[in-house]
Image 1: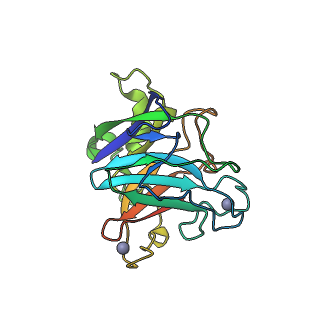
Image 2 (image 1 turned 90 degrees about the vertical axis):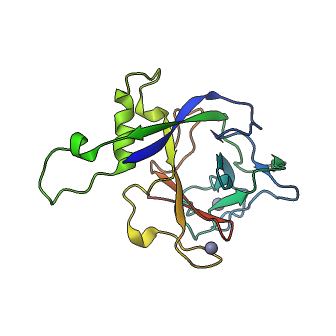
Length: 220
Ligand SMILES: [Zn+2]
Ligand SMILES: [Zn+2]
């Protein structure tokens, strides 16, 4: 089992093109800031800029009224995932009001963790829940001997793989083709109060339909 963990790697300029949480979104010309369709009608908060091999995933979640806006639901309108081409992206003008930006822009580096579940798990009975690749990799992070951080909060999520402990009935359908979407990333709330976004203490999931260039977000 392999997981590509995303690890906190210090601060970056707000308009950096690297993997990051926070800062300002980079988008094609003519893009306008997404608005919450759940309840508040305000601008969504920009959470993450995630360059992947097929484009750039740009993740927004409503934080204007977290109790009222259903940011945890993929179909509520309280979040948005855009899939942009990698070229000709530019910083987007930030709306004057609303909760739009995280307090800090945080660089992310990737770290591939390969685990052998037979070695790692107890040799228990068949009733046990199958080991979860992301969960094992994340909880193992604090034991990585070579790493300068060695704390679980430094794990900001992961790229690719399969969604961690997510019920099948929560897998989103593509809003365009209605097909099952591909899992793209996990997102954690962040390393500290200065950098974190509020996901209600939950894990965030990013999905994509490469054919339709659509994205989706939800939390567990
Ligand atoms: Zn809202
Ligand atoms: Zn589709």
